[in-house]
Length: 72
Length: 519
Image 1 (tube, rainbow over the protein chains, first blue to last red):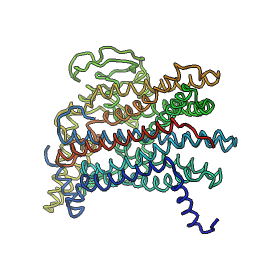
Image 2 (image 1 turned 45 degrees about the vertical axis):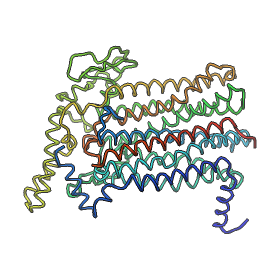
Image 3 (image 1 turned 90 degrees about the vertical axis):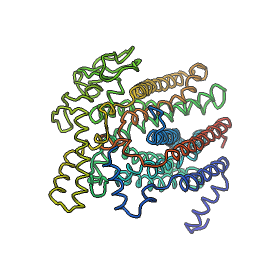
């Protein structure tokens, strides 16, 4: 067994992943899910509203205060 | 949840958040509870050296892994929604919400991710004791993640430890420990995680019952039932205790929620708690109709549970809207409750003071700026009431909250009974012969999820209209975005989450049918 801790850790994960059975399917689901969440939903549907609309925190503060004090 | 399906932006945003939170909460409690059950089983294996316990541990660990993998990162969507749909809220809560969520993210990553790998890949590669330690740390890590989320939620129910900065429109944390150790947050955490333990225990008992019904893995199933029932019964007792603590906090901090949970319109001394009841849905808070068509109640118990005094006055919905009753605050001082109308006036004063402060600052009018700031601070506790136009709008959805609460409580006692009966039959060595009980135990599995969801409906719907209690109503929290975008993502989430749920059930079903593997 190698004494290098990094090699041992790498082998630990490598062998763990290669010996998976049901885990392979689960990892496929996790990867597809993360792609859908971050590459589709976050990118196209869930942009940070204040972050994308204003340049700096002062503008964001002013906008939120305006929202709060404007009569509904 | 949506009380009125008018297609407004607020309702769709609320509906979307409820949908994602409820789907997320299908996965989380099973992870929280099953992690501990697996760790207990592995502890027995390490102490006894009996390979049958290793087999038992590995089977439930596989189901834990499936649930963890499918459920992981479903909560991230809620954070997406904060930034997109609830930007006013996200900005307003400032670092109070951000700090616990950041700690949660770091802890979840380092503790869960690291030790889960050892749990699944480490059999026969690391020592038995280190493997066991990893299983326990995974369980603690998952529960610690829940702690930070629930601290954030507890703050929304009872905002403490912060000061509103009118220059930035953000609440700034003044005392981290006031936020982290708030009695509402602590009770919420204890009650929520123990409910998760009970759910997981019911899951293990139910699946084991299914094996027994098919005369498969008899010893495996009996041993699983013993561990799960002892764990579940212990958790159930703690659940009752923490539920009492939560109800006490609700009585002190959110009296309207308590009144709605019980359908109590007219307050009274020595109020009873309803065991079973049918609400009169036509009842308005200010009319003379009976609140219930039918009810069975335990006298004085609500007063005792809410105020530790069997004769204490419990304000009803009408009292809270109209004010005028006396109550004692957490410092022991007696006050006369303000009416919702008076609170609305003070809330509007706070909002006008904020506007005047901003204007005075822009104009360089120092004395006016100072006076406006003082008025804002004096009335800030009613800030959220300034957004309301009708005193009755402080009443949450009574039927949804009332029935959810009573279903949750009734099911909690049912689960306790299931654990007791399971242990009795195992002790008598008769459990595999009790087909009726095994069937009941199996069909109880979905009921555990129903109870868990009901708990969140009570917690979240019961505090409407507030997104932050008394400080910010839902209507002021939402971003001004296109309603159509929210509708589209609502249905996208519905599809994604349903697909995940179907995948979870399918993969789990297959693994359960395969059953525990021989070493």
